[in-house]
Amino acid sequence: MRSLIIVSAAAFVLSACTTTGSIDTTIKNNLPKTCALLETAHAAFIAASVSGNIKPSTIAKEKAAYDGVRVICTDPGSVTAANALVVAATAYATVSLALKEARAAQ
Image (cartoon, rainbow, N blue to C red; front, side):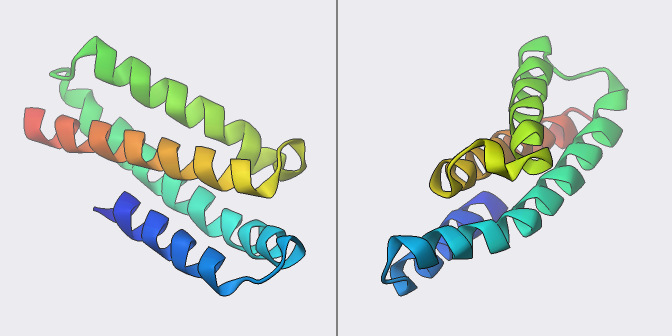
């Protein structure tokens, strides 16, 4: 659900921008918020996963998504702003789905 909100908000923000420069600035300004949400979702997943009832494939997907976006959150200059937003939103969606599965397994 949150991933849809993030993607919708990003689409709204992007639609309000009129130039590439302002789009990049808007994305770079909002990336820290997206990264903070991802950190929170990852921490919740880790806490929920201690039950041991989560499929190894779910754990692997969550880890890959989290590890992939940590690079962008640590060094946003390593990718374009638009790519960073897409990667961060996709990773957040993956982590959120993994968290949902972890909670269901408890």
